[in-house]
Length: 141
Image (cartoon, rainbow, N blue to C red; front, side):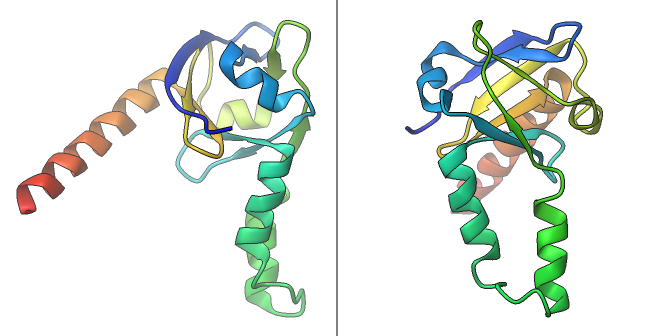
């Protein structure tokens, strides 16, 4: 499935957020959450996470090389397996919520092969930066 679109959802008192209905079928076998370096949370299908691991770590097979170990340390330790509940929600672990500054509102953003979960204010700022960058690139042509 290709994930696209953006959706605003509330985060409940337990830290659960509803996943848009159109995405749920792709996540019935579980998903993986991890903190992004961009200030949001990434949500992968289980298979998509495996592909991302292969992409990021594929050339770094040797755990004897410092670079390979550091890539693993940056990518894998903060990953969490999650399941959708009966209402189509996932629990966002407290540490990930804190890192992404998520409190009561989240924006769920489809990014092709994965989903990003943003704090509303951070998403607004990120979207403005993306739009400014696109305007700059268009005027440079």
